[in-house]
Image (tube, rainbow, N blue to C red; front, side):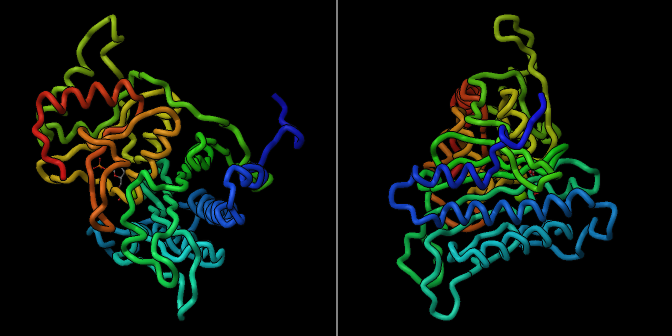
Length: 343
Ligand code: AHM
Ligand code: MG
C-alpha cells in the first residue's frame, strides 16, 4: 500500500482532534502528550545511534534500586524532565531514576495541574545487545491544590489515571497511549519525524498461546506460578497447548507483542524478591491501564492492579497482565495453590 500525506494522521493531529472528548479541557493534556512525544523522538534518535557514539555502557553510578544506570537512562530521564518542565502542565514527576519527587513548580508558582510518573528507559540493561527498550508514562490530575507536587498526588490508585502510554524503541519506534477511551498506536516515520496513526483502536486478543516469564527463576516461584507454568507446557489439543514461551526481558516489548498476538506476561513474587521486581507507579499501573483499555486484564495474582493503594513512590508489585482468559487462568492457579502473600 502506498501511503500518501492525505491518508496519514499524525499524533499531533489526532490528539488535537480528541481534545473535545474532555469537556472542560483547556488543552493542557493535549500539550502534555505532545511534549512527551517530542522527548520520545529525541530519545529514539539517541537509542538508534547507540553504538555509533560513546553513549553506550554504564554511567558508573547506581540508581536508587541499586541497579547500574546506563548512560542512555540518564539521557532519557533528562529529556523527559526537560520537556515536561518546558511545557508547564506538570507540577511534579516521579521517575525510576530519582529517589525523590522532582518538583517543577518552583519559587511559589502555582504549578501545572498534572503529575507524571515515568520510567524513562525501561529494559535499559538490554541496550548493549540491541534489544528493544521502552518509556512508560502515567498521568494523573493533581489532588493537592497548588504549589509543589506532593506525595499524595503521586500515591493515587491506578484507577484514577487520566492517561498512560508507552514508547517502544524497537525495529521501529511506536507510541501507544490511552486517555481512557481505547488505545491507539502511532509508528514513528523517521523521514518526516512524525508519529503516524498505524494501530487505531488496539484490542488485545481475549486469549493467546504465549506465556512470558523469567523461567530461570522457577525454583524461586510460588506453587501457583509453578503449577501455571506446568499447565502452559502440557499437551492438550482442546486448548492448543503447549504454549510458546517468549521472554525478551524488556517489559514494554513483551507486553507490546502480547497486545498484538495475545499472551500473558508474568513477573511474580520470588523468594529473592518477595514483592516482585516491577514498580507499581510507573511500570505496572500505566501498562495495566493500557491493557485494560485494550480489553485485557492486569492483576497481582489476586487483585486488580489498578485498585491497589500505593504506599510509596518506588513500591514493587507482582504482575500478571495480558489476554483476559490467560490472566484468569493464572489467577485460578494462584488462588488454588499460593497463599495470598502480596500486600
Ligand atoms: P529496569 O526498570 O531496571 O529496566 O527493569 C525492568 C525490566 C523489565 O523491562 C523486564 O521485564 C524485567 O526488568 C526483566 O527482569 P529479569 O531480568 O529479572 O527477568
Ligand atoms: Mg524499569
